[in-house]
Image 1 (cartoon, rainbow, N blue to C red):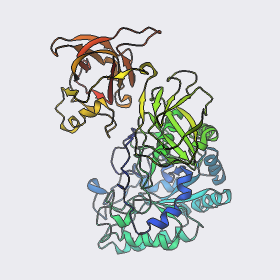
Image 2 (image 1 turned 120 degrees about the vertical axis):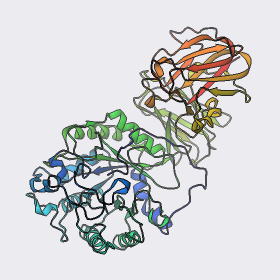
Image 3 (image 1 turned 90 degrees about the vertical axis):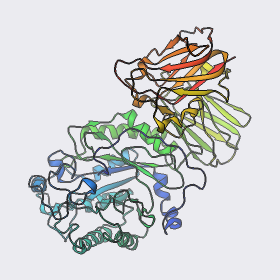
Image 4 (image 1 turned 60 degrees about the vertical axis):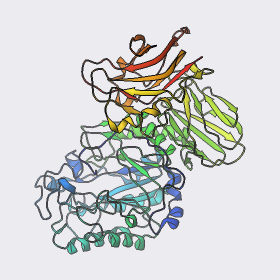
Length: 596
């Protein structure tokens, strides 16, 4: 289940569109708003990738060595052959330990509010009692309708149930052949079975057609119309088309960023689909060679989705016996402990009312604001004006928190990362106001308590230069001093042994502190040599500070260590650079200069 051969699994947190910048799409926009409400309130679901590939423990469909007809620019022509090994795995598929009720209970205990199950992946194997092909679960030693049992279990438990269905089919002999009429009939017949024989289907999750015009060749408009007719209350994702082709009439109800966290986006619903298991080339299905992601990572991804006003569909892969592997089940149970304690900051909330960022973000419901302060955040957060007065504030984890209102803005101070009062990886601050909150077009400012009371001395006429000639990021240089760039980092240099950036304050000043923010997720092997030099003339440089350890944020000149504070330095020019033994790039998010 991927658009590209390589999945990007780094977090990519974008910023908000301006009000009115996200138009409503499709003719069902108004009706969809009502149909989507349960889903937007749910925030958290389980994505199950499971079929006979679990017998081999390899990636679902993608590990098939045979051709992949019409699969984008790297696919093979229609009508090509199969894979005698992969295509025969179903003959050994006998998951006798499959228990649909236990799967549903595991999802519910994790705090998940809906399940989406792979009825058919790209490899063409069907997990229900289809009458249109013998390549199905009913022709395995198991001979049980998995879709039926799982849908019944969900309906009985009050769990919302959705179906993933890939319009691609690398196994079917008529797929993409000629005018595609035979396969189109097969496709419509299978969807008719799924949407009429299994009760309410709350979500239909397509995964893109193959190469060819979405409407003229694949008739995707007819497919979408069929879904609307058979299940009028269902919601449909944005992949009822050829790959990432954005035909307005086909993008349906919600977006689906894959393997990454979506940007802050509140006018167009979205859901990040993300693997619980990290494995080479995927991790969607059962992968014993993969590694279950840490609890901290899972919580951070959930928090980033919710604060961006999106959902998280977390993918698991049951094994060939039909069980959710113990390591995955344990992690889901741990997530459940967290959601039971902090769920009110996730479920039934909206992301916002201001844009999120690397520091974390917020959710809100009525007159309640929930700040999700992640480990990357400093200990001081200034909120934009919210148009409401503070009533109360508390740390849901029980730690200390200070909230001060000044000129319509709140300054929130929490223990620094690593202190006992800071919850790991997400400190959640619940703030109550005197009226319901509404969205605002503002930005959160973050800093360290070490610079409270100091004045920023980088004047508006200060300039920035760099060793890099990368045109893509040179345009962002001016945002380095404000941290307002819409990119995850303000800029990065070319790969050099000594990349640098120089800030010209335009006049010599007494500098008391410099707050430097890096992007640690990309720079774990680069931040350790970060060095600051100062100069009065831009020619003669003096080393003033060196990063004491790999980190995403430092306070330099003076370094606040052991309670001691240096006297600072006097300088006009500041130079930040790396001293590496091999070519590398310098990434910086923001640099703030404080002084007298």
